[in-house]
Amino acid sequence: MQNTPKTKRARRSTRNRVQNGGFEKELTGWHAEGVTVVSAEEGDLVHSGTRAAMLSGMNAFLAQTVPATRGSRLQFIAHVRGAVHLGNGPVLIRLRWVNASGSFLGMALEIFIAPRQLPGSSWNVLLDVTNVAPSGTDGLNLRIDAPQSEDDAGVVIDDIILR
Image (cartoon, rainbow, N blue to C red; front, top):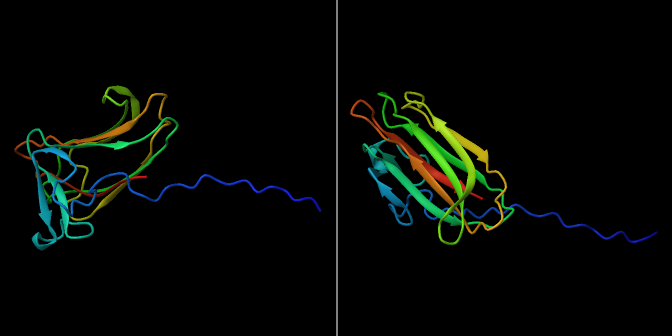
């Protein structure tokens, strides 16, 4: 019998590249506006752990850039819901490949949630995979925009994962 060399499969990393994706350390690691951290003591607004982020301002957004390299494909997971039964405003989640200076290289993934589509009583799981990172990639910029009008209750997000 001949010995056939075994090929090694690339293993998908289980390490979350997002810093503080569960908001247990408030907004550490995030650029944010119109965002408050809610706690489990305030009801069922937390998916897991003790905290989550609520986007409720007119220009509400969360943003963070994580390391990435050419050829990367990352899995994106997040848990979202409306803040209460009144409904949410629009939500736009954009993941963009960037170089070392932060300049845009290409779109990695875009998810749009229309107004009034998120229930205030249960969590929705967002799950998708980015396209392949182009040459020159040094990072992936994640930005969640959720501009809320006076009639919108806001959007709660928790357990954001990029791996």
